Amino acid sequence: MSPSQLTHVPAQPLEPPPLVIVEGFLGGFGSLLKGSFEKHLNADSRGRQRRAIFASVGPVSSLHDRACELYYAITGGTVDYGEHHARRHKHDRYGRTIEKGLYPEWSRERPLHFIGHSMGGPTITKLQWLIKTGHFGDGPTPDMILSITAVSSPFRGTPITYTCGSSTHNAPCVRPFSLGSLLAKSIHVFSYISPFLPSPSSSSLLSLFDFHIDARRSAMTCKHINLREFLQQMWKSDWAESRDVAPYDVTFEAIDARERLVDGDGEGMVCEGTFYQSYVACMTERIGSETALHAPTSLFHKPTRTPLYLGARFIGSFDYSVLRPAPSFFPQSQTDDTKDSPSINADMLFPKTSSDSETESDIEGGLRSISRPEKGKMGQEYWANDGVVPIFSQWHPHACRTTTCIHYPPSQPRGVSATWLLQPGVWHVHQVDDAHHISLIPAWLGTSRQKAFWEELGSWLQAVDDSGLRH
Image 1 (spheres, one colour):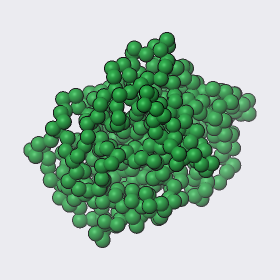
Image 2 (cartoon, rainbow, N blue to C red):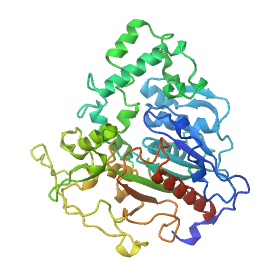
Image 3 (tube, rainbow, N blue to C red):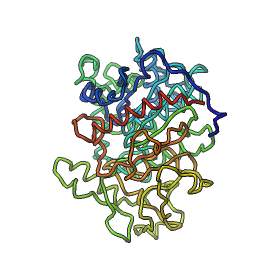
Image 4 (cartoon, one colour):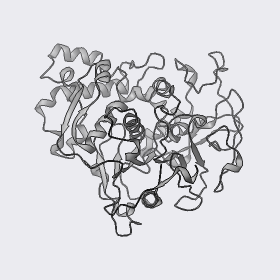
């Protein structure tokens, strides 16, 4: 990046750009977090407090629908999912109307910072892509998003969706009697009787059950369908077994479909006016020197962490060869006849750089190079995980060779310093060891790790504000 490519943006005399918090699958726990972390976020505020804004989006909706809901939650107005999208997925084009947005002055001159947990991360990158491709008209620009911080985000899918019921060979079908099937039926029941329930906005508890079904009311509520139609949906859900729902969007089939566009306009590609970073949690360790498979560390052998422990064991030994179609990252040489667990020669999980043309001299700040897995083998990063998402998926959208990224070793000190390159248009990837999917956010537990995370994030956001570097 040459100095001639950069322009200096004068510091805003008003409040610092607020931080928009986007929760993940089955999210909506902002009420448990709000107010408890803000003093740590503003520890380096220099007297200018940064606002934190919780945006409500569909907890089980597709990335497209969530991104549209996020945009209108901020700006206000009637949610427009797009004519083509609505027709393709057989729901109404328009959703709820938001009388007053959370930050209606949002623009390039008044940008926002974003942080997304779990599916909140790809929701934000989806939003940026929709803005870039003109979904919301010609006015909005991608650099209205000043920064994106992703925490434990499944940018490139996760095997856990198959554990919960997604078919390994016939997505988006859901296996009967699976956890995913039970969840879908529960949502159908709640949606069917929702006309007789208080508004989700009437209390923070009821907001947990706001599934944002506004565009699907004609197919889900008792005011629009009869009992027979409801029972048909309970038997086989047109919504839950569609390609417009969160569980399908984290299948590897869906990821490959989104990543086929790898040019500068492809979904998930970086924008030069936005700062990016990701926090990658890992609660597992390699089970032996001759295998890439992982198992939870001894720290997580506790009854209170059983769901995450079981998830970590499942992902740590997942057989990617059972998936049809095969994921794009799966080595072509590994067929149905060679399902043995692949081995790896690497001692670390992170690739050194993102670019094939990048050399070791391009890396500053004490980053270490690593050995590469043997050709035709898969590295540990496909099995190391946080109980929900493998770490390769938490890094960033797209493979390293097709995006721009710098991966810092777990031992790399973090903070705003010379070793932390403050550079837009690049994913800065940080691994957090001995951490599970919800160690940092969304629920506030007041741990020393959470306090350090929010203080570090606040300092980074302040440095981004002060840098004045934008294309």
